[in-house]
Every structure is written in C-alpha cells, then in structure tokens.
Length: 226
Length: 184
Image (cartoon, rainbow over all chains, first blue to last red; front, side, top):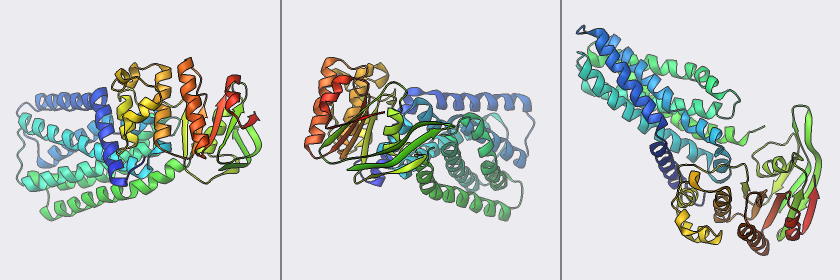
C-alpha cells in the first residue's frame, strides 16, 4: 500500500466492515446465537435467581461462543476466498493484523453490549458494581478479540484450519475466561473485590499483550509459506 | 532487477522446477512459456515471495507487484473500493480508466464483474502500487481483444519506464512483448 501504517490499519478496518456488513454471515450467526441462548436460559431459569459467579460464567461462555462464530472468519475468509495473496503482496502484515484485530474488538464489544442488555433484561441478576462489570466486559472483549485474531492468523494457512482453530483457541482462551469470570463475578456480588481487581488487571494486560505481540508475529507468519 | 539463482520448488516428492538461474534487468520483459502444469504460476509465486523455494534464492532490488489469474478480488467490494483500499491517497479513477474499465463498472461489486473485468482490476492494483517489478500470470486468459491491448500497453509502459516485467503465459501471441524468453 502507498500509505503510512495508521492509514493502512484504518483501511483494513474499513474493508472488514464493508465486507462484513455486505456479507452479513458472521454478525447474523453471532447475534442469533446470543438471542436464542439468552431466551433459552431465561425460560430454563423461570424466575430462579442465578448467583453472581454462575451469571458471570454464563455470560463468559456465551461471549466466547459468540466470538468463536464470527471472529476467526476474518483471516479464514481471506484464505478461502483466495484474497490473501493480494493482501500479502500489497499490504503490511502488521497493519493487516491490527486492522482485523480492531474490527474483531468492535464486533466483540457489540456482542458484549447486546449480550449484557439481553441477559439482564431476561434474568433477575443484578449488578452491584457497574464500573467493575463494564471494565471486565471491556477487558474481556480486548483479550478475546486479540486472542481470536491470533488464533485465526496462526491457522489460516493450515490445511484443516476450521478444525485447528478450536484446538489453538483452547489454550489461548481458557486463561482469558478464568480471569474474565473472576473479574466479572465481583461486579455481581460474588467473590472478593481484591481478587476481582487483580483478575481485571490480568485480563487487560493479557489483551494488550496479545494486541502488541500480534503484528510482529503475524509478519513472520506471512513471510513463511511453503 | 530480479535474479533467480539455482531456484527449485518441490511439492512432496515431485519437483515443479529445478536449477533455474536467470536475471531480468531494468527495461526488460521475460516471457515464461510452458504447457499447463509446467510450473509457471509456481515460479512467479516463488519470485514474488508468496511461496518459499525449496532450494536456491531470489534477489530483487525493488518491491514486486504480482497479478495472477488465480488471485481473487473481494466479491463484496467494488473496483473503486479495491483501489482505495490498497492506496488510500491515490486516484483510483485514473487507474481504472488506464486499464480500460468502463465507468458503470467502477462501483459494482466484483462478484458482478466478468473474469476479464476482474483481471483489469488486479492490473490496476498492480500498476497503482508503482512497483518497478511487475509479475503477470496468464494475463490474457479470459480477456477479450481490447483487454489484451490494455495489458500489452501496460507491459510496454512499465518496460519503457525502466521497470521489469515477467510474464507467464500459454499464449504465443504474448511472445512479441518479450525481450527474453524462458521455456519451462
């Protein structure tokens, strides 16, 4: 690309948005999944109240699965459509990674907001510390989007990428989920606040680290194709 | 300038090509001929860095643009959006005009364009990058007579501007553009 790094990142972000909004596949699947699973949960609970810890675990499970539907598509689609070579030739790999990761972050934030709205509307769970909840959701979205983008980038060129993405995502996302649940449950009155704050810091640190390490790692990945 | 030295590529046990040594200097056009499956596309991908050679090395003194038949365009993006994506500060209309893509097609999704039109979009992206080394893989496949002359004039322009062109083709008519030839 004839431009600077920042404008390349913005161009990738814009391209992802246009392709996603016109293709609709990922957002529709993730949105439908969130809607259906939250309705099922509220019907199953039928007035019973979830504990803070259980509510946080359910929110995180839903957020992770919603992300796993839509997020990896960004890289896998490039390979499946045959457009990856165009990017590899003309675009900076670091800008491609960052643009895609930021788009995934936006998707995660939208999914997290919709999920929170539906979840608290349809269940009787109450938030005791809104600040902690918002920060743990934000930190979670950063960590999930960065990890998922990294997973998709790692498996994009593999022969059995759709199967591999799950296997690679597991070790990357389990620590995120553990930290996320620990951070979020304190916002709903469960667990120790100090543990929640430490988990929140860990979550944000994990996300920021994954965002930082992604572009140089991806440059190496794209340089090697056998 | 682009130089290949003892270049070889093997997929599993089978060598696609081996021991290729050549150099293409500024202002030259190398036409790579060969039957289907001879390894022309693999050679061009190896030269552009999309594939790592099994042995040998490639040296280039400038960035490489590569337009190939098997490269896909984004089906949901229009030609104008493609050019804007790959150069945020460029003039997409000028390049689309140069490759002979007519204005009504500029804002249509690429999925609605013909093979020949998409080939012109890929050529426009390559030319817009202003890279000195241009690799073209089967540019005349699926292209009408007007499209062929667009590709031919683009090649002549790059060569006359002291650029390097490597053209992989099955079409013997493309030989007239060559300053050098390589048979695989």
